[in-house]
Length: 66
Image (spheres, rainbow, N blue to C red):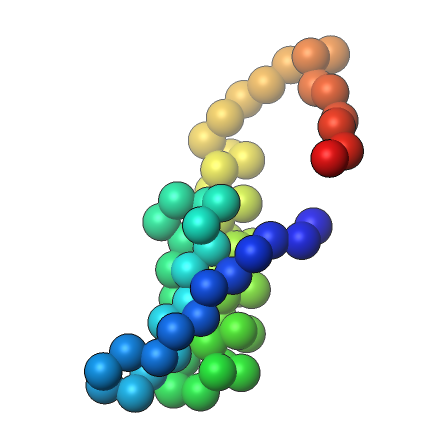
């Protein structure tokens, strides 16, 4: 899965990472690389939580490519 990530440095010097496609999926790090590693972990956690919240009928599952 590929997602766009925005990483910006804040006034305190930390790097803040956000995934616009996943509301509330944010992380940070002291370095750019650390923020990138942390946001990958945050994405995995976000997806895991969302999957556990929603029960769905596999018969209605459709896969699309864009």
